[in-house]
Image 1 (tube, rainbow, N blue to C red):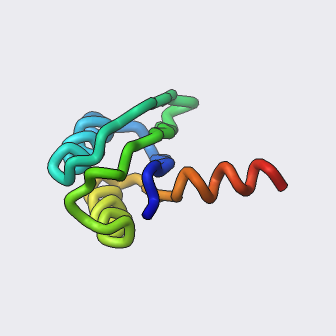
Image 2: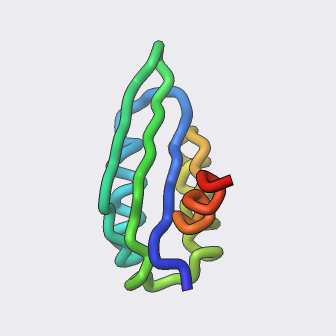
Image 3: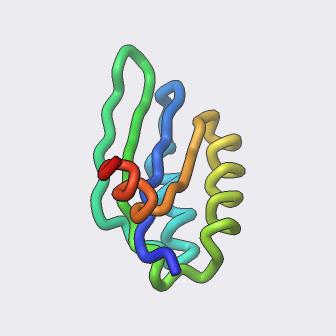
Length: 91
């Protein structure tokens, strides 16, 4: 079972991006462990490390919910297993 995830959010900056993603995570009992965000020349970028161990939904279902929320917000959202990201760093 995947315990941690890495979420990336990229797109044109606008009000409500952080709130929209954070609310969706809270609704699904996913805790934000760490977060970094910035705006560069009008482009919003955010990386979050999240705890998936108590999630109410599967990783695949959460990935779909995040994708849909991203479409509503006009940003691209991806969810990766932190374990996968860490293994790629070792290569």
